[in-house]
Amino acid sequence: MTAEERHNRRYLPRFTLGLGLVALTALVLLAFILVPRLRMEEHTLVSPIEVTGVPKGYIVARQSHTRAKIRVVGLPADLAHIELLRLQVDLPDQPALDGSYPVTPHLEGAPPMEVLEVNPPEVHIRLAKSVKRDIPVQVRIEGKPAPGFRLGKVTVTPSLALASGPSEVLEGVKAIRTTIVSVSDATAPLSIKVPAENADEDLLTLCPELFTVRVQVEEIHATRRLPGIPITTGTDEPRRIAVTPETVNIEVTGPARLVEKLKAGTGISAVIDTRELKAGIYVRRAAITLPEGVDLINASPELFTVTIPDS
Image 1 (cartoon, rainbow, N blue to C red):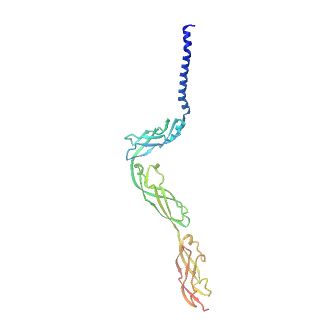
Image 2: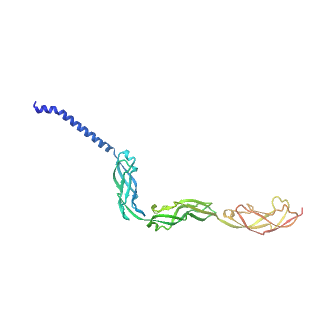
Image 3: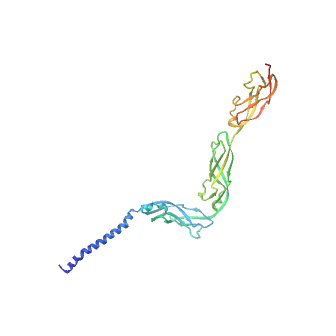
């Protein structure tokens, strides 16, 4: 055996052991790198876009996109807090009134994750001066009251709303309309608080946000003439008494639902009380009784001749 062979035999085990340790270390490092990568997951979410840096006295009048789709990759535990990821458009110190700006992901407070894509990557923004103006409020009424009732006066408080928003939007607004107030089958006055209907993509801010609407619902009144109502002397009068004329014609008024149903002998009576009268001839008025809610306009004739015979 030569000297070289003896040298190789002596140092070969050491070299092999060293090479094995290096390989093992490399495998461990590779595992630390690849195993988490193998556990990585990709998520997609839609997030609102926040615009920052709007100059004082201005407002965002138009924004091409208010939300963006974002694809991220990260560990499952980190992706559980994906809602902490925010999307922003950071305007420069002196932004153009009309321009496009990149959408930037902000990971402040969020666990580490990699952003793969933001779609759309930029948004178009138009700025306008912010102004305030009082605008009349209009009430939207829908439906009809119950039969026999009609719509009366409608009021809204306040009658003016202080609106603030882009000048180009406010210029075209002539009135602020409330949401629908239904009066379907109503039989009594209504008082309700309602908001304004959504308009102009919520670009306007209103003060107040709620308006008090009062709606008068009135009964429809009718007038009716009822002829030939019999004159009686009451059930407690045993004597045979003559009344001339024997009937009275009356004119009444009241809610149409009541007046239209009136009939002689049904809630209507014309009575001359003769219980305290002795035999003789008298001129008396008849007491006319009507259903509650119905009023007498006139009666013809007003006076009657009452003849009470001797017993």
